Length: 627
Ligand code: UGB
Image (cartoon, rainbow, N blue to C red; front, side, top):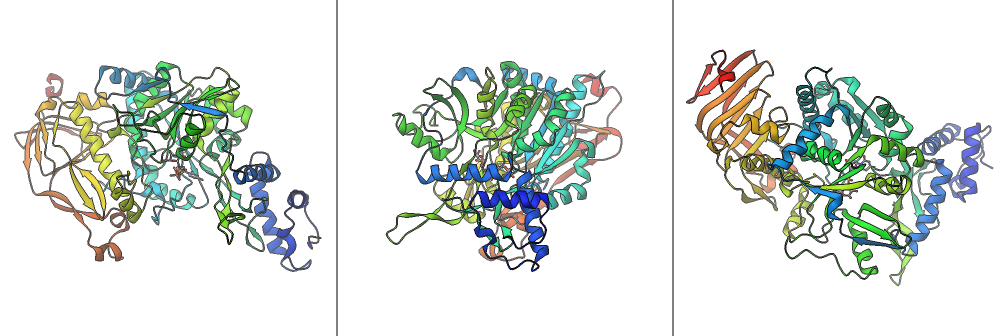
């Protein structure tokens, strides 16, 4: 029937799986036996890859698909039967950078650094952003142009040094990092790593896991969509694949066997995750959490997952993130009205999940062993409508099953009775500013007063975060003013970049600022500080100052007053925005940096240096100790 002479055992099995699942249409167009034999083999090879990369194989995928498509057609809410309520205060903690409690949490976090591994799902192409490269390669800000992946790596290296300092007699720590890549992102990410010497990470501390795509459905009956005669239409299955890959690769188990205790997940465009990571780890340790989801204050109806306690009539109770489009129907169905802002905080009682998840490794691996990394899935078909406007059972575009990494909360609480799940609230200024939307879409959101989640807003948030860290410690950093770039409103203040080498934690930053009230930074200033051995006492900056000190050198700024022309962000004209003459990194932001005049202090050779009354001089031996 298949018109292929000799099927291998795998091909025969897969053909049977497809035919038994009612997918005969795939083969209907195939020409007689010998024709296109190579293409037919290639078809089965790609189906075999789909079969191997899905828990339970292709048969399980088709079966799950039929069930979920039916439920979607009937309009069932997958969370039917669950009643949401705001997360209970005792399951969480609120971070207050600058407080004694925050310092204590950071200290606990530093103690955990020797037993942490990081995992970043980076298989998404960011279609809405329309950037031609991989998202990891986006500059987190244009002042230093350090890419997102570079900043993540800088934090990991800085954390290793912090950990080494906290336990001097012990062997140095190497923090593991796994990146989940996809067919689309692998070449770009590998090229970035190769071109930049792995950003200083040792090759043995990096693992790439590759996610495969899943087949797409063309209608509610679960008929598979074809790309052409010999290829099924496929699409990404979502970031939830990361758990399946950590299980099937054996990596999670290996890390556990090596004595690691924590596994931390986060996404690929928000470098601010790392600014509060140590305190978040401290919360996990202090509250004994098996899973800790980091959250930010969320406006009612904001399009971001909402953290909620879900209670079922059968007695089960989970703390989990509910997708924003499901929260409101659930609230209404349980007679709780709508999601509205609290009159005091002006935010929803349901905080926003930012997909930074800290899991206790033994609990994680135990739950993985039960679930084999499988998560509950969802499908989001967009139906074609008939002549009378009523929805048909065929789709406007092929739909596939998807899964989300935060849904591990369900697996954990379902499979591991007594597991402790909680959350950590980070303040808005150190929160979540991903790069998701192209300039036009960001401008439209901005006009509606909705966070634009574009490259410009993410960059402004980075500067604002460093500015607020300085302010909290007592520095005088002038307030931001509103600027509009190609329709996107941003709060623009001093362009401050405190590299992870200089400020890996609030405690480290505090140690380096000897008299915070003597640090004044004007709104139009640019300040970059990069180097672990830099201390600042008195600084009055109205312009641009770039300080870079190699690990072999040190610099103490005793007194520096700098007024210069500085750098400014220049809005791009309409012509520039639509021309190919402007760099893409600038075009997606709507501005470019004009580097007018700056003071640069670059120390690359061994030596101890001092800036006193604007003069750079060699420091006398013993002076640092006296300080
Ligand atoms: N990713 C993969 O690695 N593989 C995939 O197949 C898909 C994505 P998106 P999404 O930020 O506000 C999430 O596409 O899925 C990686 C949460 O589910 O940016 O729309 C990708 O590379 C949601 O609750 O996000 O929504 C990136 O690192 C809310 O928190 C990450 O997964 C939302 O993010 C996220 O991918 C949000």
